Length: 178
Image (cartoon, rainbow, N blue to C red; front, side, top):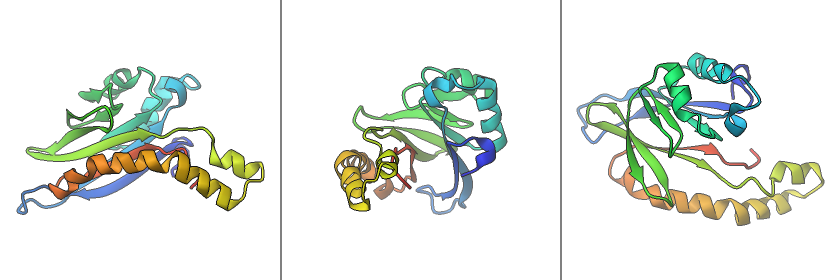
């Protein structure tokens, strides 16, 4: 977590591979950023600056509320998906269905990664329950009952991609205690 870039901004760096074993791995920076209700609490220019400073190749916005294309345009990035709220320096190709929305991103000619940006249910919220005196067991039971089934469905819907040699990133707002 990089507190200089906002309290809900996380970055990950990973190595991608393609189905072509002769291609060397490449560094790829993927960022998830919850801009909270479309960024209404801050100037969208600050959102753009935070993304610019983080310098990702792909950014997944949570709670974008129709601002995905505006932010991509402000960054000068040519690719944005209003459906999955992905912004990318690389071409985005729509994929997935309504149950497991994800997109392919062509990170180099013929080399794709899959990115699923998910926003799991927020209520009831485990950290608030902990604050109010819930036991660890009660919170684990809540997470197992409320968020885990949805996450397992998402992972099941993506399982064939990795088997096909396509790197998969699952990012988002999991709304769960860490």
